[in-house]
Length: 485
Image (cartoon, rainbow, N blue to C red; front, side):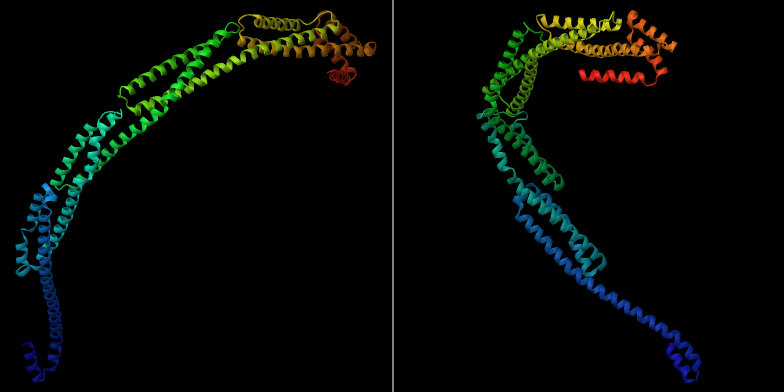
C-alpha cells in the first residue's frame, strides 16, 4: 500500500516526499527479510530435530529390546537379580509410547530432552546389568575351589597333629558362607558398591585363613627341626650351672664368694628349671596332638633367648672366679712392694741420723704400716675376701704414694737446710740478722724437728744478703738427687 501510494506521488512529481518515505520503507523491508531468514533457519533446525528425534527414538527402542532380550537370555545367571532388573527395565521403557507421540506430532524440543534423558538412563541400566551379570557369574566360581579346599583342610591338619587358634576353620567357613549369601542378596538389591566392598572382605578373610594354616605348617617344621637342639641347649645349661655351683662350693673354702654371684647362680638354676618344665609341657602338648605350633615356636625362641642370656651370666660369674687367684697374687705382690718401699723410706730417713721426725710424717708412716699389716691379715685369712683385699691394697698404695712424696720433701728440707745453715756461716759475723736466723733455724732443726720452717727462715735471711744463693743451693741439691735416682 505504501509503495502504491509512493508511486502515485511520484507520478504527481512529489519526488522529495517520495524520496524521504522510501528510506524507512527500505529499512522495514530489510528487517522483514532478516526475520524471514531467521525463521527459515529455525524451521530447518526443527526439521533436523524431528528427524534426529526419530532416529534417536528408533535407536533407543532397539537398545531397549536388546537389553530385554539379553536380560531374558541370561536369566539363569542373574538368578534372583533377574526380576528386579526386568522390573527396572520395564519402568524405564513404559513411557516410550508417549515419547514417540511427541516425536511425531508434539514438542520436538521436549522430545529431544526426554530422549537424551532416556539414553542416559538406559546406558546406566546397561552398565549396572553388565556389572551384576559379571559378579553373579563370578560369585558362583570365585570361592568354590577355596571353600572346597578349606572344608577338607581341617581334617588334614588334624591328621598331621596341627591345630589352629580360635576361630577354627569350620567357624570361619560358616561366617564366610553367610557373607556369600549376603553378597547374593546385595546383587538382588542391585547394590554393586556394597557388594564389591563385602567381597573384598571375604577375599581377605579367606587369604588370612590360608595364611594361618600355612603359618602352622611352617611352624611345625621349625619345631620338629629345633626340638632336639633346644633339649641339648637346656641340658648344656643345666650341666654348666651344676659345674658353676660346684665351683662356688669349692672356692668358698678359700675365697669369699660375692653374695650377688651366688644369688645369680641360684637364679640361673631356677630359670633353667622353669625353662625345662615349660619345654616338657610343650613336648607333652605335641604328643597329645593338641599343639598350636606357632605358639610353641614362639616359646622355643623365647627359651633359646633366655638360655643365651643365662649362658652369658654363667660366663660372667666364671670370669669373676678366674680373677680370684689373680687378685690374691696381685695383693701379695703389692704387699711385698709396699713393705719393701716402707723399709727403703725408713732406711733413707735413718741415714740422716735425725734426732726426731715431724709428727705428721710419723703418723702417716705408722698409718701406711698399719694398712700394710691389715692387707697382710686379709691375705692370710681364710676364706680370702679378694674384693676387700683389692680395696685395702688401693688404700695402702695411695697412702704410700703420699708418704713417698712427704718423705722426698722431708729429705729435701733436711739436706737443703743443712747446706743453707753451713753457707750462712760466712755471713754470721757481718750480719746479725743472719746470725739470729741461723740460730732460730738450728733450734727448729735440732729440737722441734720442723725442718720445713727452719728452711724457710734461713732462706729468707740469706736471700737478703745474697740474692740467688738459695736457688743455687737448691738447684745443686736436686741435680745431685736426680743423679742418684
